[in-house]
Image 1 (tube, rainbow, N blue to C red):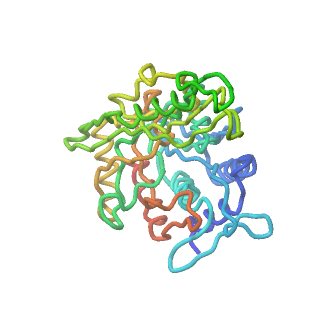
Image 2: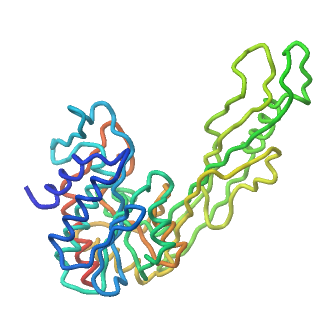
Length: 351
């Protein structure tokens, strides 16, 4: 068993869906024991290791979404190997990539590099935001979220842009009363429906940033994902009707909340990312192409790369997980891709 696989297994077996402390202890202890870097644990629980000025950093996160019933045995997360893949919660998102980054960071023969594992990525990037606001802003970063297989099966692609995410809550208010005496103008359900239909007519912005002479496409969306009234009785009009919007944002625009027609509140946001350094993106892709196919792609999901880019770090996303693996009941990662990612990360750090 190679070291990346062994470390991945250990990380996956360490639960981090409710409390990241134990996983953070494991990562911090390993980095202190295995590397000569300065290792810190900040107030949020992020683990950061630095050699010198850490101008280039590998960045991941060690929290996960809750495991499915089939991913737990005797109260602990499970990991198993089948057909050249590791199965278990966090194998793809993203403890496999985290293990590859840790080994690459240890073995890279270079200085002025860093490694960071954040908490709270699945909760809006709270760890990344805390770290950047408190001075962790390397010049360049590779976020090791999944990017494999976007352009073609098996390609270790480099995501040079991704959409952001904004969660919006809308609230329409009215007068609670008997349904038989209801007035349409006072029914908040109708007001909420009017706003929802307006959101359905929203023209999604699209942007095609050019990185290293090539264009990638990002298109925003706004989707209503839930509606709830303040009263469960079926013979009264409620005093309040609330709805939730999942918006995927792009740098060029987002839904104008003033036009929705009801009270709105942004309850969570992760910014989009576009790499601002074509030369850096090219270096990452060249390192990936030493091990096989690789293209520039745009990732549809928000990641901690958005917070790093917003703070001024030139950022790309490059990792072994394939699209559609994260958060699933059968989550898995290809062992060959893990080995490949460690080689790429080490080459990037040494370059």
